[in-house]
Length: 325
Image (spheres, rainbow, N blue to C red):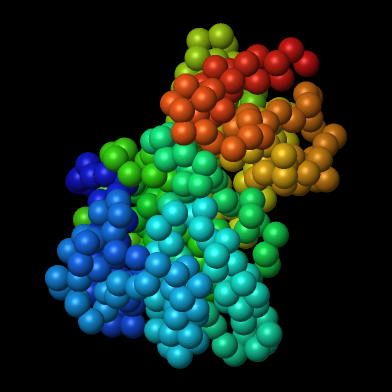
């Protein structure tokens, strides 16, 4: 029977098990070795493998540059960028080097790095430590972008990411670290390129990522009492995206809501909306709705941060609106 452990513990366990399995796996980043990481996710690794857990200087460029070189030479680095907001500092190494290597060498060279980084708001980290960055990276062919939501997904998707030969950006949401769920003790993988239908329904499709997935489930429970059946899809990997699962669902329900924490303009939801408009617009019974954060920076003041973020009531409102058509 599966144990109940936290999202953070599931990630820690995946790292331990992959380092045990494969000597080419190592971790590097700011305070990831002796300290065990700013959020405690790499605890215990340095004590077991002191030569495969490297504390680096406070330089995202150095971290990803070193990881790229090591990966090209046959290792499987798992670099940590402490806060996803600072992935901009190593953007060149990530999008102009790692992402393009396989294509440039016609599949004969690989850069199998798994960049673990922490994104999202909700714990009062203010402007520079609370952003959702997936939209910054979605326009870069060659990157795999993974966004786990549950502890089960966190462990299985991280193991799959580390074993993948492509550069992976593994986005962990800091507000999810203490959430708990069933996770098998043994190592297991989850298909990186397959979305999960979390809940089946016939009236509305909600595509939701990370913290917004909880909002979707809460909204679905409310709508069920009103006689509305909601289908919920967790993409898990947003690039490459499992378009087929989403398209088939919307063709069935005729209504689509996309919920994610990042800003609305140019966000993940905009791409999903475009895909559906291009492929199954004739099945739509109502306009596509997006439930997101406001298009403003995330403030430090708790009342302002809470105001900016999407809430269950916003998803419920969107559900009621699309059901009017």
